Length: 486
Ligand code: MG
Image (tube, rainbow, N blue to C red; front, side, top):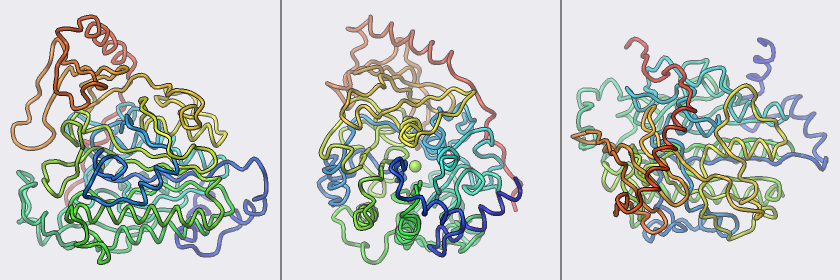
């Protein structure tokens, strides 16, 4: 084990730096002509990007020509859900294909892993990177991790050959010199968030397990991630690769590089999204140029809805209600675009339900990998809708807050058993018995409660809640234990 790990680390830096490939890489490259080569997979996971923030999802002030083109050449989903409404549990679900409650990566006492968290994604969880590596993939993580910053939880310990990014959110820790200027109370009103400088936050940039820069210059993050992603693709063009690219933007504090700063009519928030758009365009162009487009599945989505309490520095959920932190549609429903020229029909659209939970199962199938045994997998295989062979197999969606199910979608209906604001003063939970009921097809903005006129639907939802609760398992809370302060 020790030897294998040392070997993996030795060539991981080369992977992300685009240096000379190691022996394992060359051996794979020599077999590059085989017909049964599994597809390359790129998952791009934006941070706090709202359902209404892209042109192809109706935004008229943020210019996203590259993502609009990706949708025109690929498949856009209109009812696609993140498996949580905040970062850590959402990312855990994407990379494990399981409800985060099972791994303990969601908590009723903390929203996400802090910079001093002792926990992280437990070792007995199998990440998509581990699964694909077992199929001969080279695996790289670029961007925000947020599944544990202790060495045993970092990407290089969880199936990735290399890592270049931040271990947690770009606002997770305040620099010592600025701590007196930040308080936990009403932090969204702090003017420093709206005139941000990188030095305010104590965020490291890491390569594998080593710190490169602290505090990281945040204005160049998207640019540097783009360059690292291009190098990763070019270096591993002849080998099946899995790239998990999770930019820090557009999570506050907002930063864009000089080329994008001050350009968007939507202000700094628009600048950051337009820079992400250019990043996606660049990667798709590299795939085309290297002849990889026909054998690469690219998925673009967001980890949760917009952080609305930050006003103009937060995104938009479009027609959906509320945003990040809540179980209203705006907290969970996110943009989702799949792109694979020659396999996925260009300009297709799916209105059926899908989830980031399903990405693991779908990719495993495409890669010819067996699903992890001896555990409940919560994802479904979306191959049928992706390749125009049938409807989405997913009929229902659960909306968790911490470890509890607050709402359920079944078909066109959604029942809220509890509601609670996401952020701000007066965070009071309201229980609903009978539940609030909305018809998401007629009323995607969840404005008209139709429970009184649909008693049979309500009764079915109550039964479904009991059934789904009974099917849950609860891992040890990974978010609550903190390391001593330095
Ligand atoms: Mg987020």
